[in-house]
Length: 466
Image: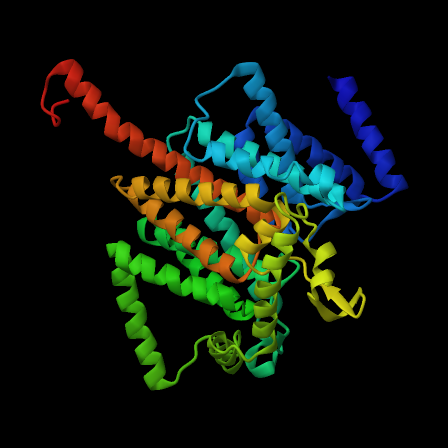
């Protein structure tokens, strides 16, 4: 072992001297990730989520890019599969397992029919790895796995928000097109403000749950700080679909969860005081005038961006019809968009740049994965709704966790009406982990419903005694 360690150290030192000091550091990091994944796959999954703030740092391998969270997620998925084959494990059954398999199967025809088959292979490979991660979290035997997973996601949202605020706070933002276009929007750890907005807003309900129902004062304090940073990051990202989603999440929490009503009352009182005194505590961070103009543009269809979405929503059904039943293939939407006039100026395609998606989850899935994709999506929605409804019947603390994960899916659903963020692997990884949490809560509800009945049948006692 000493000889092996010395040889490795010497090799890394030579490699670093001939290339860059970062090479041995990265080599050790890769080796550490592989060792962690083989020993504790679930911990490696949590590490992948916590590395989402490094999403912008992507290593290129030809035409394929791999970010740190993607790499760790792939390694964790492979390691869990190896352990599962070697050791077995608990049941993988859930109402969401089969519909997720159907979503993966809907992409297979694209491997033979799509114009860009490598793009199909890329998405199928990454989504398959994320499905394996779903199975890993679903089958984990830890009692607090759902709580820890949601806590890690909430923490990652707070870190991403902190990076966005640090990078863009107090920067100059210019408004055009009556609020439809804003220059200088925050992007944070992602390539664009839209991805930043949806990632942050779907973590906000989890942060609020931990802020009000955390197990310790430190957890509640950290979650409160993450919530404030997330609101500031959303104010800088200026993603309108995220604002609509945040409003829906707020209504959900107030209606369905008593602790949120007290928080809403406090926030309302503070807001009234700020309005009366005209005091802006975040004046050095957020330009209030830009924010108000951006919010006011949500309801108007006259902006160029609103007209563009209407054009996408009108033309994409024709693309779906022309490519029945299997669609154009995963990530092949931009190759077919120019045929339907779906381009915007400033790009290399003809007189403009092709749109990457239909700015709507249903339309994009229908165009790329065809009828099988739409069936799988509808199946997932129905199964997920059932799982969440059963989870909401649980007692504390699981009830609060179900409230938070339901709020996260409401944010995802609302954003999905106006955008398509599943093409960002870090976001889809997070969504799959939330799906796993919903499945675990559903399983917990099933156990709580069936165990008392068995106890009564076997022991012949009253429910309380049993």
